[in-house]
Image (cartoon, rainbow, N blue to C red):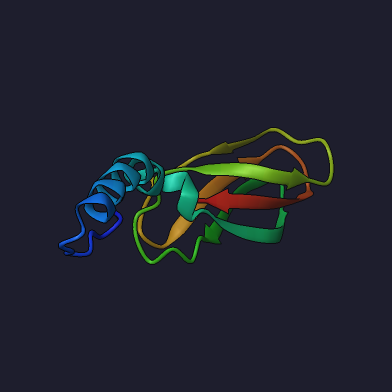
Length: 98
């Protein structure tokens, strides 16, 4: 994703657009700026397969909320449908996927 430039004859506006684009494009390109939060996902002990709803291969994930003590790790390769996590406890989490 990148910021579009509007064609203009106004030299000042054109310079501003170029400056804004150079500053904002790196932010827009960061996959974490398009994070989706999966709220209140109930994990069981062992392997949990979760539909991440991104419609593409995900690039990462983070626990944004955890309602108990648990060790959680990714236990399968990223794919375009699911995130596979293994938990050592029954716990409810919210997961940021990007």
